[in-house]
Length: 238
Image (cartoon, rainbow, N blue to C red; front, top):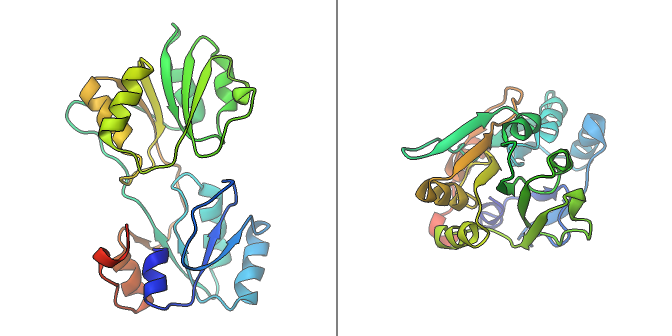
């Protein structure tokens, strides 16, 4: 999306939460960090004369999406740009749970080797089940205490990932279960496809409910909403 906006010479600002130490560079003006809730976001939009907001946050960044709907309610147009969620395919062994606590409860009581593919923000609850080995894949290096997980190993890598690499990862670490959020999209889907090929059970955390807002699933749809012709996908470098 950032590449498409830049190629079309649309005046835009790329906003990130600032949780990654070295975020990927973007061809747009960039700001990082929170806004200070709904009031802070409203103030920012007004100060920058923002007319349109594209909510392209992670599907599990529910608080930001809630704040965006409230902040844009009066004078700013809002479009949520979503990745379509993953859907179970033939051969998948999914157990869908509503949240982190549900995922924790779904883990077996006997010792297992779990690929805990949920990022670093929600790891603390899994310290309650110390019988398991946890494989983590993170963008930034893990702290020495491994987030309090007694038996854990962290792989530092940035997606997108491919099936061959994730098959090797699961085999090398003798993974018996995968626990993931339904982030959707193609960048992190390889682990789900690898689990299908290996016949591994997947504990899938369902997406949180979000407030009503217009939704687009493609750059073309977003550009139609902006009133611009979308650039060719071949030129976007994605």
